[in-house]
Image 1: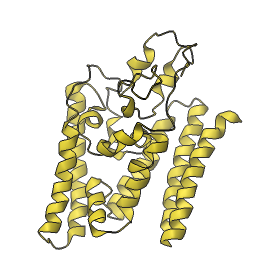
Image 2: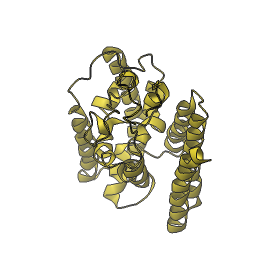
Image 3: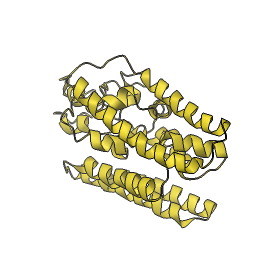
Length: 272
């Protein structure tokens, strides 16, 4: 039963968050929300252990579609970074601020950039594209993400400084338009660079939060040096160009790991 500890641990973590927020905020939505996400992720981990090929894709669809369609389109909550700035400026710990705190600011201390691999609705679509394994070397243009991060902050700041009315409605349309732009740019970059995850590597503003916290992540891929034969297969199949054979925190692209487990799946010696 030891092999099933991880899905139970993940479920326990999300249930603890769900119950805490339910009792603290006196809103049963949080119990449903985080319980659903926790169950989805735990199911994916369980299916991976059972060697089901599409385990991660199932989680992506369960969580990504829930957040995009139900929370975003039906509930009209902007769960993008603009929504986070909006709630932060209004001083309300609700919706996007809670989401970011759990999934993208403090959560990565436990599960690194697992959000990118299992829950992101942008990556959910991009991962259907044909370049699952990068066909070209990684480019040194990751600085663009800091520009998009700054633009999102300036955009929301300007709305508040100008005292624009009906900002909530603007946030909803920012969510719609923002997603269309993200999908368009992500798909264009994937075909241009022959890399499904080019958007994640160079453009996505969320990684500004994720990367520093992921450096300290408790859950990470580790290599058994005694089993490893340095075949390089893990680096070939990694969509984020991470050197998982290096167990140090300073390994190449270490904060980019999305826990997709492709390296683990493809290691011929089961060293990962």
